[in-house]
Length: 251
Image (tube, rainbow, N blue to C red):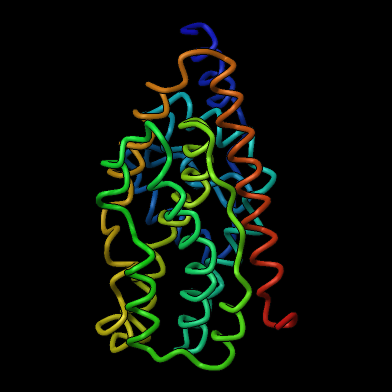
C-alpha cells in the first residue's frame, strides 16, 4: 500500500497545473495561500481543483482523488463561483438554496453511516447554516420551487462510500474565502445577516487537512481507495445533475 500511495502522489506532482481567469484565478490564489504551492507556481483553475495542489503537502489520497475526478470539477466550480462575478442579493440567495438542496440529504446520510467518525463533521458547514441564512434573506418563490425538488442521495453502505461523497461536498468549502471576500466588498449587509454558512469555514485548509489524514488512514489498500474514488465520482455526478436541474433556465 505504501508503494501505491507513493506512486499516486508522485503521479500527481508530475501532472499539469492550469491557469484560469477571474474570479476563479483570484479564488485559487486566495485559497492556496502560497504556503503549499510556493510563490513561483501558478494557481490551478477550474478542472484541477485547489485541493489538488494543497494535497501535495497533506494527503496522498486527496491527490489521488483530485486527479481521478478532475474532469468533473470545472462545471461545479464555475456554478458555485458564479456568485463572485457580480454578487447580488438574488444570486447569493439562489446559491445558498442550491447548496442546501444537495447538502441537506447528504449530511443526513453521513450522520447515520456506521463507523464514520462524526468528529469530521463537527466544524464543517451544516445544513442548518444554509437554512438559517436562507430564512434571514427571505425565500422567494424561485427558491421555494427549487427546494420542492427533493434531491435523492443514497444511504452509504460503508465509510469509504461516505468519504467519497464528503469529498465532493467539502471541495465547495474551498470556494468560501473568495465568496466571503466578494460579499464583504459588495454586499456587507447580506454577509452580516446571512453569513453563517460561508463564515463557518474561515480556515478551510484546516478541515481539508483533517479530511486528508482520515482518508489516508481509511484507504489501507487499493480496493478501499477505489471504493472512495468510485463514490466521489458518483457524488460529483449527482452534484452536477442537481446543479443542471436547478439552473435558472430550467426552473
